Each structure stands twice: as structure tokens, then as C-alpha cells.
Length: 408
Image (cartoon, rainbow, N blue to C red; front, side, top):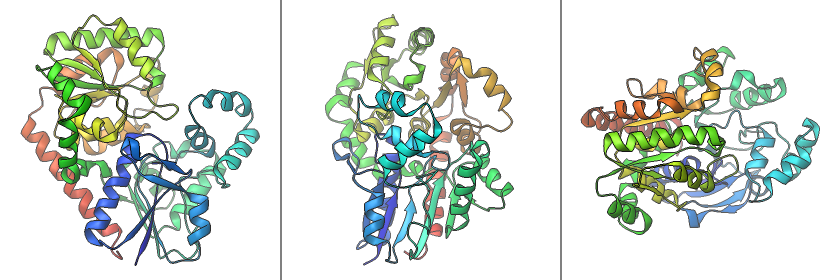
């Protein structure tokens, strides 16, 4: 029996990362039903109650199967630029995060030492692994990984990432910006869509089942005129920004005649916060606004699938909407405008990098102040054209994955 170590950041609550594991595992078992898949992250976690997986810690997995000819597959995501400190903080328990930042975050040496202790491995880029971790691996595959800020990494981390990628047996990235950055470093990578492009094609039956029960069906009943699925991360949570978002959502609901449903695409540290949404609702005049409390990734998919469109800061909120042929747009901070203008040529953030690679002609990443107008424009898109584009990306990813993993 072939053993596959499926590795990624699905050891914490982030919808995109958790869905990667489902997509890749389904494709693997379709081709080789008897294959054994080990889900591994940096920490041992059980996210099955949220629609994820029981995840083993990489240190333990490596110790157990280090000398076996396993296949290692990086499930996908913005792995190339996540440093050890960021990874460790995002794996802290609720209530622990701020204490850890205050205690260890002042000096780089302290951050590195604490992260090494917490993760059980010594790496600058712990979500990128190679033959140094599994020296007898039959194959190491980097599947649809991203790294739009690769050029700005510290030299030690930059060198580590490139060394590991050079040793990979197959390498594919999900955006043209990362592909160009690697090419300049002398590394060729295939360009493929994000794995979640296949979510509707592979899991629609499961998603529809979640749409017909629990909170999602209750929201549909409460908003018979339809709704827009809206999400934004906790770093939009200052009072001034929330006031701007509330005004934009009020106007959007009034003009398009739809309800607004706020949801969390991730609950790990530095992701989304229910309290931020509650503060937003208190600032709104719209009476047709709801909050999806569920953190089950299939409820999140169902909410988007049954919506009239998606607006938010999450890349995977956009990609789920793309998979269902729905209007979409991403938003960014007003205070980031100057930085965004300076980086416009490089498109150095993952939302813009992905949209410019795979979603040209549709709304991109707009300032909060333009949320309403951008979403209204997105809603004008031809649904048949959006559906055809979704099918094209799904097929492109499926074919690319088969090419990346021929030995299986």
C-alpha cells in the first residue's frame, strides 16, 4: 500500500487550507482507492467538528516514516512566505496569542527559539519541507503553493525556501507573480489554479446537504430576496474602518435589494473575529443583515454557494465563489493605499496576484470605500460566462494534479 503524507496548514482553522486537504485527498483516492493518506501539519489537531481532519504533527510523522519511501504532497496555499514565528502564533490557543506575542515577540532570537520549541522543528519556513525531512521519500510534490512576497524574505529564509524547492520532484505555483519570482531565482515552476477551484465539482452534493439544514437554510428562509456573502478579517476592526464598511454595506443592500450575511473564513489567530462583525452590525441601518456563527467549512461553502455573490478579504471566499460561477470581489484597507500603489506593478499580495492570474475581467481587489460600487459592477457579470470559467479552471487543476503525481 502506498503511503502519502499530505502536509499543509490545515492544522488550524482556515477554510482554504482545510479545503485543500479534502480536494487533494479526494483526487488521490479516486485514482488509488487503497492508498493510505496521513494528514500532517505542524501541530496535532482534530478539526473534524469544523469539517476538517484529524491532523498529526509533522515531527511525529517524520520520526515514524522518515526512512520509508513515502510520497509527500504539500497541499497548497501561501506556504513559501510563512515564517516559524507566524506559524507558531497561528497555532496558539484562544486567549494565549496575545500573551505569547507580549512575552516572546520583542526580539527575533526569542521569537525563533519559542517557535522552535512550540513546533518541534528548526526551520525558517516550516510549512515547506523536503528531502531533509524525508530523505528516502519516493517523491516530494509542491502543489499550487504561493509566495507573492518571496523577494522580501530575509536572506536565511529566502535561501532555505529556494533550496527546498530545488529539491522537489514536482513544483507548481498558483499565481504568475510567484512563478516569475522563482524563475528569476533559477527555478521553473508550473502554473496551476488553486485546488479549491475543484470544490464545487468534487463536493457539491455535500455542500448542498449543508445548504439544506442548520443555520444556512435558516438564513435562506429569513432572506427570501437573496443575500450577499460578506467577510473581512479582524485587522479591519478599528472603529473608523468598520464605520466605512457599515456605510458601504448599507448602501449595497439598499441598491441591490439583497440581504447581507457576514461569515468567518477562518478563526485562527490573525483571521476573522465574530465580535468585529457584531460591532459592524450595530453600526448598520440595514435590517436584512445576518451573521453565520458556524465555523464548519461545509456551512461556509454552502453559504457562499447559495448567495448572490461574495465580497471580502479572503482569497478563498473568492475562489469558492469562482467555483460556483458567482460574482465576487476582494477588498483591502484604505490605509494600505499608498503601499498598494507602490506595489501595483508587482501585485505583491495573494488576492491581487491570484485574481490577475486567473480572474481577469472580473472585479479585483478594491479599497473599502469602493466596496459597494465594485460589488454592484461584479453583479453585472454574465452568469453563463462565469460558469464556463469555473469549469475551465476546475478541469485545468484536475489535469495539472494528475501530471504532478504520475507515480500514484
